[in-house]
Length: 289
Image (cartoon, rainbow, N blue to C red; front, side, top):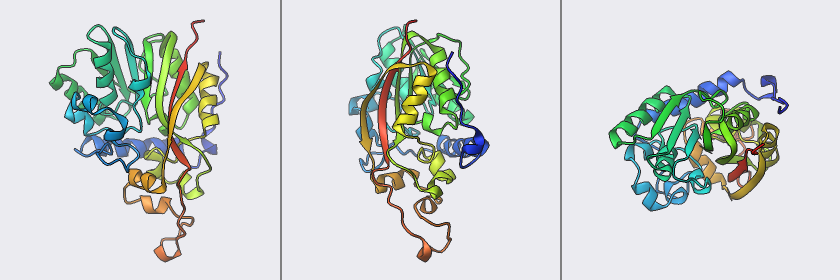
């Protein structure tokens, strides 16, 4: 059994409850609006024009695309086949669930898990209106998945695990729900350097997939601790300061890019986040024995 090396909440810059509240608030607002970070401009961290082939985007329900907030395309590295069962961690409006459902076909199944009730309701409505009979959306935290062990052939996730305060627990759960020999395929934000202290404690930066990110060593280390093997970095994209700023993109963002907590703009010292944050695509395997 993998050793539980969970980082105590006291070691975090903010409490787990603050993080979960901020994340739910951000994605509740996204679920209730017709806006998305998945726009057409390649200057943002998550642009549909960069992440998915145009033919795939055009084949998906517009309502799912409207609330997409990923940073990659995990289905592209998941090696999905007809008849498989796929579980998407932090499924949001369901863009990756619907993509997976098309790939596994009517005999397969795609299950989305999300902790935001408004996202689940929206995704279920989209599935019903679009005639997807092989998808299901379940409300729950990815640290405590409402799934039986050995359920999935593949587990995917798109820019969500970085939001979890306890990433090792997420990977332990992913390991549990995967069948022996099953595959994990994730797109996520990873740190290439140390973030400024103001950014680490900024709730907007947390809910925007920035402040909760960890280093490649820590990320893949958590996967190994959970029991995964054959961990492979498929590729990575390093972001500029402007891309990170556009992704956070709300009223709290300016405070996250300063080296001081001063409220006076003239006293703020700009912090360049270029080269500190990257989007990774990573695969791993649950051993057959």
